[in-house]
Length: 84
Image 1 (tube, helix red, strand yellow):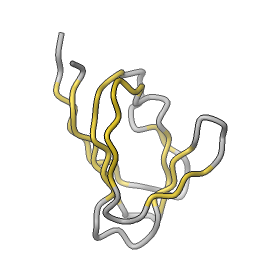
Image 2: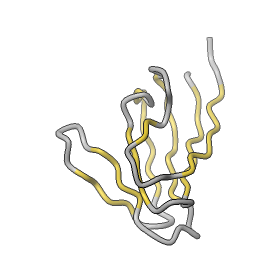
Image 3: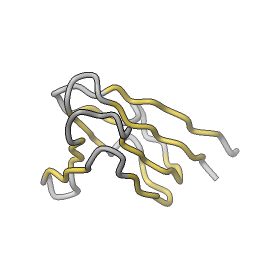
Image 4: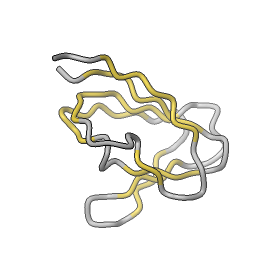
């Protein structure tokens, strides 16, 4: 079954998953251009990968439950796509 995924994730200083449960989807992940700081993504090897405000990337069939982010409190990112 195909489902639409539309999320706005409000960041905190602590790591948080983009999805509370495993959810494989193809999505565009976008850091909002009005963010005041970098958005940090946890890499597959545990490293921290910084994204600039306004930066976005497309992912095909990624498990959103394993995608972890943190950043400046109140900054946000969007996740738009679906499970097709």
